[in-house]
Image (tube, rainbow, N blue to C red; front, side):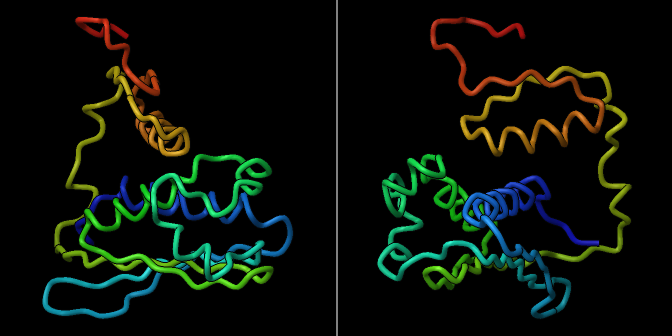
Amino acid sequence: GLVGDPLRIQQILTNLVGNSIKFTERGNIDVSVEMRSQAGDSVELQFMVRDTGIGISERQQAQLFQAFSQADASISRRYGGTGLGLVITQKLVSQMGGEISLTSRLHQGSTFWFTLRLNSTEMPMSDLIEVELLTGKQLLLVEPNMQAASVTQQILSQEGILVTYRSSLPENEEHYDY
């Protein structure tokens, strides 16, 4: 097995696939992962999301990973979103020690990929976490990113956790009883 942060990886992929879905009216979206290299007890994986969507101009590509600069205001109005998804995605990849990049051509689609180096382990993955201990427990999920919250809430609910979602916490409460 591999040791990593599956929730972060899932959030990264959800953000990238979500963008592809948003900007691809017809055609296809391909998601792949491959092992790029292996050294000792670690492997480098490359995750790729390729679409046949509207594509991104070279000028817009330079701004994609910057906060609050969605590529085009008309795109924001037509497709929605804050333009922060890729900023968050880049930060998550960076926090895991990886790199993210893209290639794109206007009206022909985009390919986003990121690489991560993960340690391998002999321990079976099912032995790492006893999720049964969480069944029936209550959890307050506070996440301003709706897309990330939806994915996280779904994963937690599948494990039997009772999830209450809030996009933020009220500042005037001394304790939280949800």
